[in-house]
Length: 299
Image 1 (cartoon, rainbow, N blue to C red):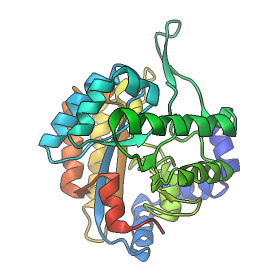
Image 2 (cartoon, rainbow, N blue to C red):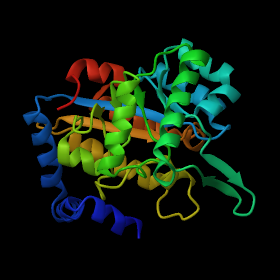
Image 3 (spheres, rainbow, N blue to C red):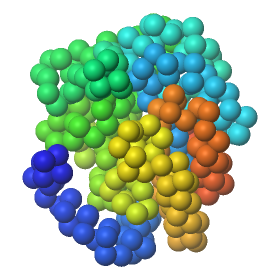
C-alpha cells in the first residue's frame, strides 16, 4: 500500500523503478550525466546519523571519535528533546567539530513493551502544518541554545514519509523563514530525477542515496543491522556498499554518496567502519557545509 501511494504521488517513480531494474549501469550513468550537466564533476561522500533514541547518545560519541580519526566528519540529526536529555554528550561532539542538523523537537521513536522493539511515533504527514512548523522551530531553538550552533539544514523524522510536493514546498518555506540553506529529507528517487542537489521547492534539497541492487531503496542501518525481518544482514550491507563504490570508481562518475545510519545500530560494527573507509577512498568526504560551499545552492 505504501508503494502504491508513492506511485500515485510521484507517477514517474514507476518509470525510474523499471529503468533501475532493466539496466543499473545505464541508470547510474544517467545520474552522473545529470550531475555533470548541472556543473558538478566531482565525487562526494557524506555520512550522517539519526539519533532517535536515548541510547544513541553514547554511541554517537564513539562514532564521532572513530570517524574523526579516519578523517571523516560526522553529521548528527537529533530531536531537540533528546539533545536536552543528553546535552553534555552532544555538546561535547559539537565542540569537537561535529555538524548538527535540525531533526525536529519531539522524540519520535519510543520503546514498545508489547512488540519488544522501538516503534515510530509522530509522523509529519499525519499531523497539521502548524504542528510541523512548531516542531521545526522548537528543534532549531534547542540547537541554538543548548549546543550553541546555528543550524542550516534539516531532516524530517521518519525518513521518506513527508514526500508529497505540497509537503516539501511547505517544509522548505518554513526552513527558508529560519534562513536554512538545505534540507536532506527526500528519498533516492529525487536524486536520480533531479540530481545530487536541487532547488525546486524553495531551498536546496539533498536526497539520500540508495542501494546498488535497488537504487531507489535507501541503504540504511535499520534494514541491514537492526530489523527483525532479516531481509538483509551485515554481509549484504558490505556487498551493496562494495558495488556502489565500484560504480562510483568509474572515471565518468560524479555525484554524491549520501548515507545515514542510527548510531546504536553500528557504533560497534567493524563492517560499518569498513564501508565508511571504502566510501571515503572512493569520493571526497565532506560535511553538508563543505558540500554546499563547493557546489552552490542547488540546481
